[in-house]
Image (cartoon, rainbow, N blue to C red):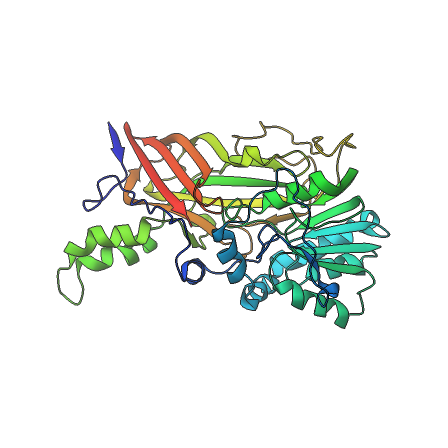
Length: 427
């Protein structure tokens, strides 16, 4: 039996909003209010010109068109404008797990940074660039296409670091750096790791400037999926309507399910919500990943429920690691990470050769919370699971054709001899 995860008002369980050719007014602001905020990005810009911030009093020079340069779309423009807002950067900096892990990574790799040239991709307010300068970097190119770069330059001046940190206001695809670099650092991760598509800018920076044997922080990333139960969330969103101050309002149930569960939700869950060990959807080696392989990510999964409970959906989260290359690369595309005891993609939890030495930033439910939280894809109706019941299927993540910053999520899953499909868009 093959079913769509659905409710009675929407036969296929998925109301597909076609993105317009022009982003509607307030689109990004509405998104930010609904899901929380994220960051400015080095991969967007208001023009094809790039400006060194310290030279902004001079007319900006038009940069030569680079081969294979991705175009700056209207969606990029709206995205860029929205993420110039200071509140986004305040939220990220206040995320102590995030910020202190990056600072520890920089100091732990100080021997690779001191006296070397660094690029900070998507520098925002410039805090990571300043950490690198404090670690002894000879020169740091802080690149950001958002207007926050103007404030970042003032922060650099206020800390007497203008002779070390050079703020470049423009896209990584457009700015010019006339030397190879030793280190690339970037906080590129979006919700569900790949949402927002900023990793492509890090790859572009790597391929344009990184020396053979250079360091990339973070060095790798892993995206996980696991089935979850969340009775309180379902009850608050749906069962509430069955009895409202003594009034039967169950006629609202279909609409309530659609409003609550049509799109992915960025929320915080705990380890108690997770029904099985997680499955690796995608392992990313920063030294070898290509832009093309990020366009579509597919992984087959098979879970065995560890308890009897209602299955309400699937959760996604990620880890990133900050390690030195384990194998000296011969070029910028050589694989440099050693992963033991599992297939690189599609296994259960990734095994680290020496966990005590690995510096990890994790967004897992059992770890301290971060502003990324977890991403939940809920079903319209729960599936009652018995202990050891099998849930198997397929997850496919695809960049939207209309807007590469959006992510299409396609889930096929089978349990108890019934098959389902759930589709949603992370926008």
